[in-house]
Image (cartoon, rainbow, N blue to C red; front, side):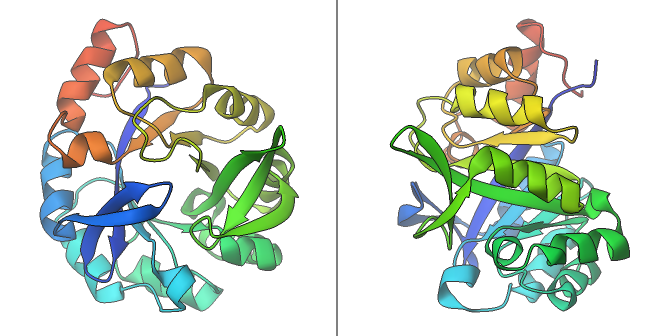
Length: 251
């Protein structure tokens, strides 16, 4: 059995880490370089850096900040937000990212996933799917969940894998920041329908939520922000508790 990964997320706007609920009401929670270093030293398996303002504001990904964060890391590092082209992806990887995550750009130009997979390898390409439930259907959203796309979550995830994405980051907007648990049912459906790793995201507030998502779905990783930012848990302390519950995790 593959071990489950724990991935702290840094939602960045400008040069600061922020956190809100359903991508709204963003509050400053710290310096991205300081937090990245702390989480890596305290057991994070990977780190995810999402520039939440880049797509909405039309600004490029803050590459200088990516460089600074990458210098303090010794774990894999995914960068998303504002990746609109192969040139943007190339710049992020050169700045120190190990993977790039695409959402809005992939929806507007699906061929970009194939282009990046061909140039960098599927292992470097993460399809970030922001989804919310509307009238009983899981729909895809874009631009930090401010716009509704016509596609359904499951179909888009499958298409993205066919085009070359090597991993799915499933962000559930309905549970984001609520700390009441992951959206297990849609996570289960997506993870069971694709043959690449799926990262569960949105709603983690207690160790039981991680236990539930790993026991109930085939997700290979779980991403969280709030429980690490407020000091409730470190990645290492969380993994110790997961191990006590029989969840296979990395040391």
